[in-house]
Length: 112
Image 1: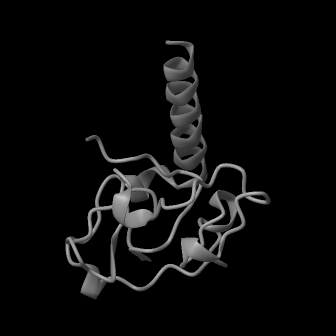
Image 2 (image 1 turned 45 degrees about the vertical axis):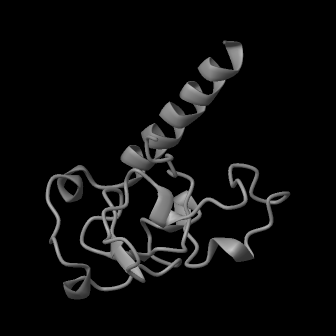
């Protein structure tokens, strides 16, 4: 039971950091088609504080301790891209498309 509380607290803190890093107005609405969105760059001012990378498989779990091997934007609750799509919208990075195989510190697993 204690481990469950830690996971929930960790998830909450990740989302709180992400919400604080993103301008509030951008979280309200976003275009619905990823093809219409510009790609998010890891150098984007909103992406840097959250450690966004376009390919999570290149992350070192020892350096990025929040990263768990096998996690990616496509399996995140904040990602709304179509199944099998190369990229899609993210609630954190409104107005930009993230790669399905990307990752950031705001990662929150989709509910089972």
